[in-house]
Each structure stands twice: as structure tokens, then as C-alpha cells.
Image 1 (cartoon, one colour):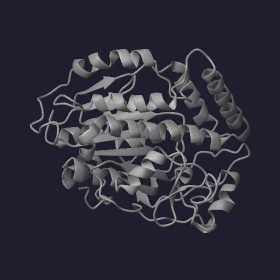
Image 2: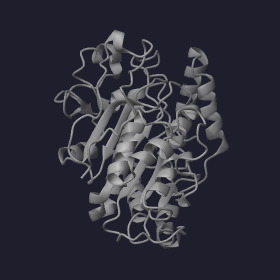
Image 3: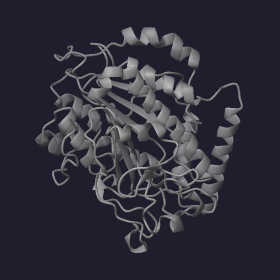
Image 4: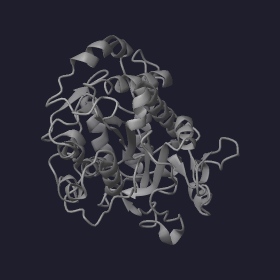
Amino acid sequence: MTQMIQMNRRLLLGGLGAAGVGLAYAGRVAAQSASTRPKLVVVIARGAMDGLSVTVPYGDANYRALRGTLAIAAPGETNGALALSESFGLHPALTTLHQMYGEGQMRFAPAVAIPVRIRSHFDAQDVLENGGEGIRAQSDGWLNRALVSAGGQGALKGLSIGAQTPLILRGRAETSSWAPGGQVKGEDRIASLLQDLYVDDPTLGTSLARGLETEALASAMSDGTPLRRADVAGLGQAVARLMTGDQGADVVALSVDGWDTHARQNAQMQTRLDGLDALIGGIRTGLGPQWSQTVLVVATEFGRTARANGTQGTDHGTASSLLLAGGALKPGGPIGDWPTLADNRLFEDRDLAPTLDVRSVFKGVLRDHLGVDRAALDARIFPDSAAEAPALTGLV
């Protein structure tokens, strides 16, 4: 199961040299030098990442009462959040991202969502990646279409990390891929489909979540050693190596699984966010000076319920957090409005309500970082989305 990120360390360390020089990129070499080309990394947190645990609204009067034992303490308290602006904090596991925030290299959107209100993992991920108005609205991905628009075919080089190229990077622009270890197993997809099938069944859904968690724990004690924190940082550095040099990738798509926290969420979020923080830190370290030309985005298909369920987890929700990091960011506070967690402001009396279409953030990054013009963003990259203006006002 993909409840834990796993990697064959021997394959990673032994194959980096070949991977670094053997990737067959299509198209011409970009006119810019390696030191001036913009870099964009899009990380998809698959499984519905709980935004209320990632960017903690500790200053909201209803936060602690709604969350109960899942509430993250305020900054300064034991195991408290790491202080951000406007009464928000980062989960205490995100120490590297908090350091970036202090350096003006991290921002967040606390209440974003895809344009349709669905709670199926596969349908929501399809919308997140196809960039259209609904399920299967486009057969290719918005990030691939952005590659075509950003300077022409082949001007920027795309790379997916993983055994399969995700929808977000499929399309007319040819891209490369690199899998640090293993193929996606068929039973992983079956498990996710079952989670969607049982999402509204309190008995079967909870039982399945517990079974998956047990299997993940068992896997951790087997010979297939799960990726430890240092290894995740190594994976980030490996990705960065594939982005450097004149033939390095400029736009990278990377998926991190395991965010479907239906049971015992606190421990799972600590583990997942430890890994995410180490991954991002590894990418920054590996890129070195090119980090100053880089924007990294972490997005998820939907958020989770505002209230805990009966197994100290959360169920499928609506709005979630989006994270931005990189040396090409301007310092700033939250992106978009905060809807509050008041009872009359929750979506369907259960979820954090969205105040910003996730495509608005993507548009801001593509316009100001990759130089894609607004007309292309509204009509081709995110079709029929002219009403959703870019949410950022400049990056560098």
C-alpha cells in the first residue's frame, strides 16, 4: 500500500548518475542558461491533506472546540504550532518550511478548493489536474498545457517523478519521467477506490481505514524498509539533481501519497509532514543557487471535515491549505480570505468553506513565474476560467 512513501535506496543511490545524464528530453534546449531559467515543482498530496492541521488557525475562536483532541496547540505551548501571520501557525513538524517563512520564502492559502464540490479522491484529483471546470473536462493536464504556452514547445523541460506520469503533466508537450523505486501496485488503486466507495458508510469506511493503517504499520516492520526522514531528504536532493545543469528539468510534478487520515490522525500527520518537510528541504539543498529561481507548490484534491470522527481522524471534506515555497517568492501573508470556523460559515455544516479557487493560485504562479499570459491562462490552460483572476501580485 502507498500509505507510506517507500523507496529502494540502492536503486536511488546507484542510479542517480545514469538518470542525471540519460534522461531523453524532447525539443530544443532552452535559450536561457541553466542559472536563469525558472524552476517550478508541483507536489500533489494525494489522499486529501487536512489543511486545518497544516496551516493551523489557532486564533479562530471555534478552532479548539471543533477539533477537540486533533487541535494543534498555539505557538509557545507544548507541541505548539510554529507562528505565522494573522493568528495562523504551521504544524510543528514543518520546521524547514517555517524557516523559509522567516526568510520570506514561504506563503500559504488557507482555504482553497477545486471548482466543483466532490469528495471522491479520483474524481477530485482528476479536476485538480485537468484544470477544467469539472470531472474529465480535459483529457490532458494544465501543467502540460502551461509548458506549451511558456515560450513554445520544448522551451521548458518537464519531468514527472514516479512510476506513472500523472494527468497534470500529460499532453502535447513531451516530458520525461524518473521512478526512484518500484512500480505502483494494482492493489493500491483498488484500496483507494474502496475508500471512495465507502466514504459515506461510517462502519465500512472506518474499518477499511483501520485495516489500511494496520497494513502500513506491518509494512514498516518488514524487510521492505520504509523511507526514513533522511531518505526523504535524499529523494529531494535527487530530484534537484535532475533539475540542474543545461539539460535539467524546469517543471517537475511529484506525488506524495498517504493523506487519507480517517483514523488516529495526529500520529499520521506528524509522520507525513515530517516527510514532506524533509522532501522540500532536500530539494532546496540540492538546487543550491537555483533555489532563487524556484517556486514549489503543495496542493491536495480536497480538505477534511472540521470535526473529528469517532476514531480520532477526519473524513473527506472541501477546502484545504495550499503551500508555496521558493526563493522566487515575495514575502507575504495568507493568500485569499479566511472564512472562519463559525457554525454558520462551515460548508454543509461540516467542512472548511473555500474562499479561493485553487486555479487562481496556479494562475498567479504561471503568469508571474513562467511568463504565461493571462489570455492563455483563461482560455487554454484553465479553460473557461476568466472569472478566476490570478491570486498573486508578483513573485520576484
